[in-house]
Amino acid sequence: MATSFSLSAQSVQENNTQAGDQLMEAAITLMDNGNSDSAVILLDQALQLSPKNPTYTYEKAFAYYLKKDYKTALQLLQPFYKKGIATMSMFKLLGNSYDYLGEPKKALEVYEKGIEQFPGKAGYLYLEKGVVKMADNKYNEALQAFENGIRATPTHASNYYWAAKIFCNATEVPLWGLLYGEVFCNLERGSKRTEEISKLLLYTFKNRITFTDSSANVKLYSAPVNINISLPKKGELDPNALANQLKGVLDRFATGFYEPTFAVGTTPFKQINAATLYEIRLHVLNTYYEKGYDKKYNDVLFDYQRKILNAGHFEAYNYWLFSGGGDDELENWVDAHKSKWNEFIEWFKANPLKVDTDHYFSRSKYE
Image 1 (cartoon, rainbow, N blue to C red):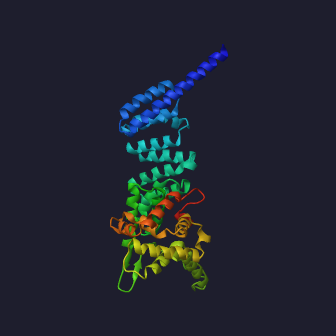
Image 2: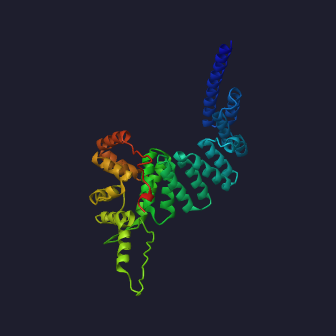
């Protein structure tokens, strides 16, 4: 009798779980279609079947979040937070709810605790932290959060997106935004944000490279370089110390390689567009490997560019990368090179950029 009862109870529990999951899936569909009120009704039914199911509670809180009832969302999730059993998604929803309620300090506190508890997925919470910092016009702190997010969770595209926008729009060192933006376009292909960043990349290059009759002025990295001149007891300059500091400047990726190499690549041209950027970037890529920078930096973006080059698609890739510029360059090039373009697209689909915690692009590797 006891065994029979146990099996029966287990069967009821399994049936309840199955029915509850079906209700939850239906509720999620309703939320996706903008019907959060009906979703709450279904989630209440699911919770009646399985009152302790945290996923049902989270989805109910999310439904209230979508309804902009942030207080109810908080009330539903705070018990999990206080008991130390909140999921990463709960930390994100809690922090966002506090932020929308005008309590950014509490939001940041929640994000920080979530980062500590889920270091492997911390990139999602660093993203939210960065957004809060941006809203407070603390762009340096926002950048720090986004770049920490890139290192913690390199596959999460949104951190690259915001880092690219800040570096290109609000700093004197857009080089890092150009590189972060290229990574983003590869990780999130075909979205509205991809088109936005593609346009940003092209226009940043155009705005930062100007031509005269006899020269090109390239300003991709205009950060000040500090040289400390040490004075020995005799009061004379120490030439060895100065030489070592200058060597350190020249060894830097941005000032010693990328910007000057890019500038050399511009010399045959008088304008910046997808066609000339292809030639210039090809020069930079080839120089990167000829000078042995690949052994020093082991950079996933340059390695991917070289893979594209070796496959014979670097020109098509560059037209794709800068296609958000809004002119007819890509369309005209594709019309003239249809087979090349089709071959590139097939190869591109089968060979995406792959990043992980051991292989990713980050400014911290270069400075």
